[in-house]
Length: 142
View (cartoon, rainbow, N blue to C red):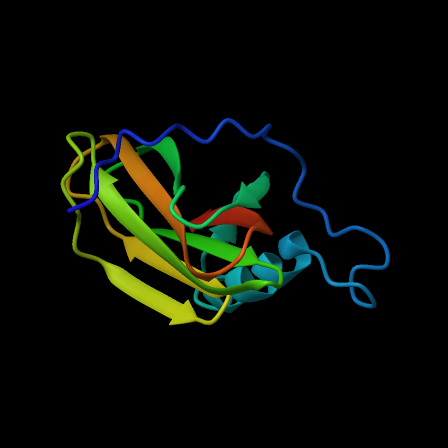
């Protein structure tokens, strides 16, 4: 098992509105909003914010989040070329991997969870195949 002591994602929390022109020139954010939209069809609400930055091989990004028992969550991520494959993995506050639903399709990935207890959880986003690339991560809940 890889160590979670890599580093905490410290990107700024910003508005999740799609930028003009993103359909002609896709961004990581517009790509992840497409993926998260599939969960919206199942009643999930996309959180008004996103995390973005650059992913590098061998340097996963870790995000600490507070989740509440009784809510269901999906953490969705997308990266641009030259990224070829991403993974999203969820952990409890002690760094133990959690079982949940997983989705992976090339440079998009998602992990779903219905937490048993409220508290702090960790989301690891990792570039599995490809080279340094821009990424964006959003989460949905219901």
